[in-house]
Amino acid sequence: MKPVKAWPVDGIVGENGAFFFRYEPQARKMKRRYWRTERQRRNDHTKLTVIRDEILAEVAGAGIAADQAYRETDLAIDFREDVTPLGSDQVKRIVEIFEQAGAVAKVSSIHVNGWFGDYDKLAMTRRMFEEEFSIDIESVADTIAFVGDSPNDCPMFEFFPNAVGVANVRDFTDSLTAKPGWLTELPGGSGFAEFADRVIKAKSSRKT
Image: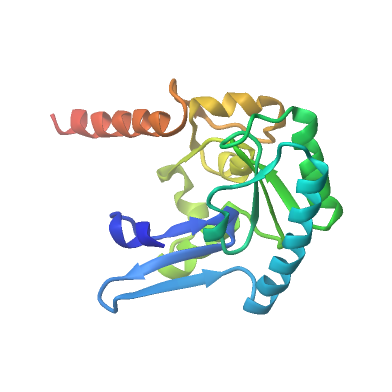
């Protein structure tokens, strides 16, 4: 995962908590920690392929996410990114097909993501903090900020007191099981930039 090397970050939790990656610059090695075993992931891929075909056959207008080829553990069904936006009933049907096959299904701002396993973003974030930094996030939760944009971020919204939602999270108000403590005025990446700007200004004001 190139961003782990290129960005000034200590690690990345990906695909709804399926893994965390952490680059070790001295060893020039990427550490990859998965929630499920390699054998489980192979079996999951086979089952997700069947689900993919069923969804495409049944839900007119649904597509496969443009970045699916780079995903390792989940299936992302596009319902509004590169396809004509689908109706709520169609999105609901996609979720049903995943769940009827025994998969977990979560709606993001542009995709329905489906996978097999009992993990989420919070579970893997907790594991990464413990294993890589010897930090119990329960004890430092109020010092951490999380920024999200969709229902699959609800475990993080619920756990972190300083959780932030970018503006387009309002599109999913009815399906949020937990809400962020603060909302930006702008959507998507612009909303994240708005939040980052507020943090930078707050830090600068403390120095003066």
